[in-house]
Image 1 (cartoon, rainbow, N blue to C red):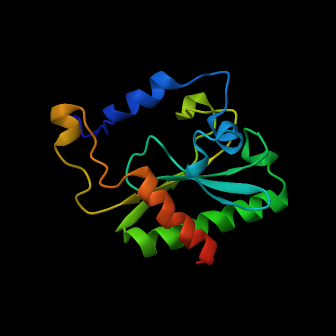
Image 2 (cartoon, rainbow, N blue to C red; image 1 turned 60 degrees about the vertical axis):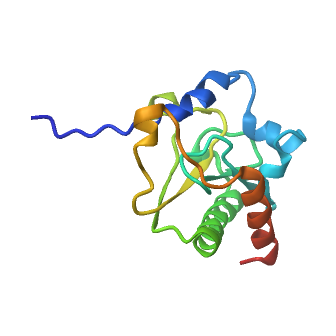
Image 3 (spheres, helix red, strand yellow; image 1 turned 90 degrees about the vertical axis):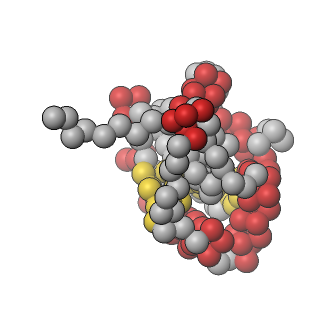
Length: 163
């Protein structure tokens, strides 16, 4: 008997098929108007952005402004601010979305599953009891209960407050 469980995320195929390997979507988000509304906060060395192909509502990414791929390339000031922003993001998500828990992590290198392996970024994914359902299995559809635009406005206000 195989006890291995598989987590399927078929809604992510849209992201995978749209990846332009020669461009960095994080750097583009900072310079282009296209996804500018999803940049929630800019610190001195790092920024927080909504994932536009989220696993769950409130899926954030925290990344340095510098286009670097490995954690050991972070300077101490970048590292300190980055983890401070991760902590701040979790605090804000707890206040606004009231999740039951979080998945947080970073994928370094293609083999680890990094969709963007040239610009290090940390994922923060809010989780709720029962947040998975039959929709992804039956209809290859993931239900996200709130628009990115609406959530972006709410979260930006919280980051401005300094929560």
